[in-house]
Length: 463
Image: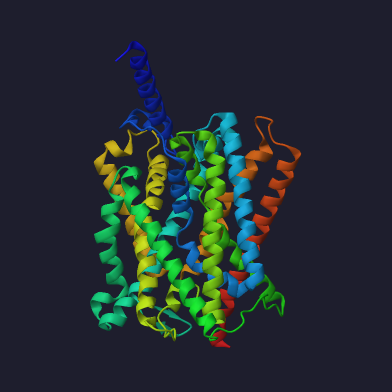
């Protein structure tokens, strides 16, 4: 080996060690964690791997509520809103990337801290806690719906295990979620490095593809047989209440695209960090296509009978050969997908809570007692939430109208409008004013509409 080659090897190792330090500053980790850097050498993630990771962050439980947005908006406005939200998300992430590079911030939290101080960073951390807890509660609700059944408007939709074995104590909702939590979530959540989840993430994407292929195939078969009626193309608005109800889909759409808290960590791991914009565009294009197809074919298949969680619709006779088997394939594949995505969303949740509670402590991975306590406490909260929140629409309304809209749109726009480095253009500021205005207005109206509907629903039996 020549002296020149020795020098190249040394430079490569130095570059790898530097990369590990940057990666350790991924979303909202406290700076105390720097000492844990360099755990192993890493040459950098590929473009395809980065697209895969960001797409996994985006596609989750939100896809199950999107067909219900078609029922509220109608087919054409619904698809248009999915595409519009994707472009708005790309714009907000572009602002994050640009300002992070100017400020040399390696994380979303670092950018918020540089712009608004420690309280700005804490506010972002709290929003991520609320958002991720809400999303994980939704995951559990869907798994419970699929395996043990759900009730909607007084009608019971049987779960997979109920259909196979009948109703027993061991396939009740509480027991199924308890077994899933202890047997799957707890072991996967106990892994201290997110890289350890790469194989389960790959499997989760494959299961999501299985779900989409089967639902498209079922719908096309029924279309060719003439058993599907023409769907409603536009929303059915007949008074002010029905008009305001249209805004209740906004939090669901916002939640479906939230991935901002993982953009920096994916960028930090890229072998060529200049590719991050192409990664974001590719991921959003891929996920938007999946969302449009799922919404379109899900609403075509079930029409106005589409439930808040479309998986719960797959307990009926579809009127096709092997219909019962395909029902089970659709439901089980996506329930398994959510089980495997759960730890990926749980990972930043745990780190952010640790950063809030113990900002000056040693790295979480070095303290087994703290690691186990935070993990157990969060899993217990999520488990209880899944057993007491009635539907995924309710959970999405809360997280989407509060934390998710701040993470996705309000915070990036606020950083741009404050413009501490003087790099925002007039076009950027106009876009950000529009972004904040539409986010605040839509979500305030959505919260009002939900509250009004809830009050009206509770008061109607006494009238």
